[in-house]
Image (cartoon, rainbow over all chains, first blue to last red; front, side):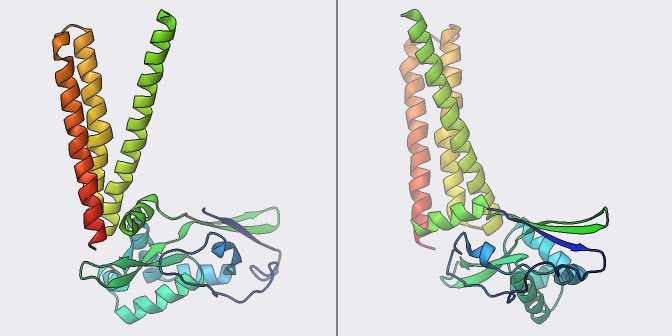
Length: 154
Length: 105
């Protein structure tokens, strides 16, 4: 389920310019699942967006923390020692760029909360023979999270 | 007939090993689900899967080995079976309880 997308820009062309311009970040949200084709429909972020996001120290710690376990904005705010509002701002940009996934998780008090999981697995930039290649690899959904979700639905 | 018998024995052993591996795989992911999502139902599911597939496999294998090498008299074969069945039952009870925990979340 993890997808590999290659962007390419040659010479002086603006990064990612070779790909068709599509409306960014328009996605449908479901309570639990997003359809499997959802990701391919999503507009790929361009290289500038990805690099700009990764330039931010807190974005990097959000990605690192959510790669280990799903975390809510409040938990992220505590972990990264950043105010909730700046967490929300970054989380929104990350989900728009499809580098972060959001989903709902039942809480012990019966309510649900939104948690975030890193979607970015690997970002690769390669300069070779006059061309600049970049690749964003995303990870599939975690088996453990899916098991937990399905078990709760039984 | 001996060849067919040992072939069937080998196949049975292979199937038992396969179900132990798959059962422990699910149990492992249930354990990860517990760590990742603080989901208590996953604790009981993983314990249940490990009992049902891991522990029973080890007990059955050890029991068979001990009986085959005459360390344990063959008369105790049913005792080994009883232990395996009992552990299976406990494992299933854990899994059933895990479903209850999951439903009550």
